[in-house]
Length: 245
Image 1 (cartoon, one colour):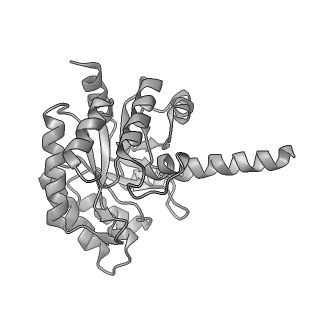
Image 2: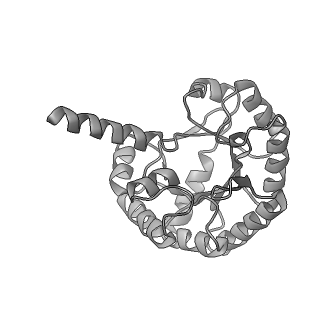
């Protein structure tokens, strides 16, 4: 068993409903080292943070080559499993997944929205992309953790929970290993999704997100901090720079 496969197995095992894996997302090798030194069991990138740190805005505007090079440096900076935020997988999902695995990733997020167009992909279209990602990963790293992200709660809709559950089930059938639902912060709705989801549920921390112990009590398996660590770090940098004058 290769070192990358061992890391993939270890990362997969961290997804335990009720004992969530908490990921404090990073953006470069330095931030990855800092988070690893905190005792974290795994490292996760945030596409928003990586883009901002390189002078880009989110939404696949960061060149794929630069994103992969940054991922490779993060992987080399720590012995921990690394999962990468690939947004929608760029134009060629198979190429993007392949390059990410080659760079050392053991998992990824793959979202179902098209930010440049302000819309969600059709479920059938997204399922096709997930199947491509699954086939590509299985050919190289069978235990690669494919975290399907659905953005239904980022587009206000009275029927969001029903759509989220339908997409979760479809994505599971297509080969996803987890479901990531940014924008969901209502504890009762989180509970409903957890109870009806065939996949471990990943919640993202925002201003109104319930505390991790409450999420754990409802069966959440993964909690991500997204761009908040980068924003906090940049705010602290700005504050200390002003104080230095």
